[in-house]
View 1 (spheres, rainbow, N blue to C red):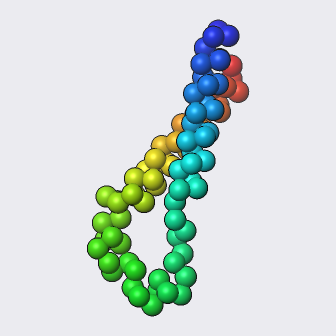
View 2 (view 1 turned 90 degrees about the vertical axis):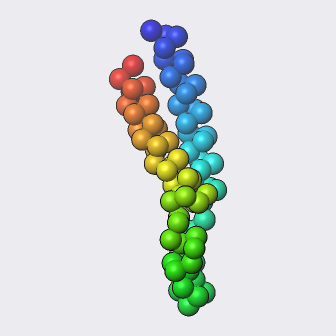
View 3 (view 1 turned 30 degrees about the horizontal axis):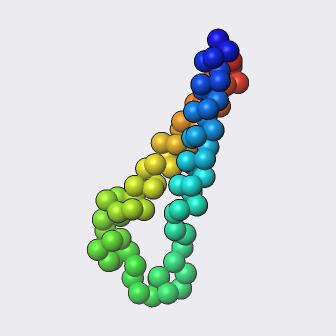
Length: 78
């Protein structure tokens, strides 16, 4: 049982570091006044955001956050 806890703890640390990197790599959601004037949402990248780097980071952040919550609960129970 102790080996399982060590393995889960190592995975938890990796997930924590990965989640931090994903959050810090994302751009801000508000582009400020220049973004609203230039119509940032109407550009090609605005329409295909799910296929861009930002979309990938968003999906990775959601998955890593879910893994973080699950691993936190599992480590608390153990």
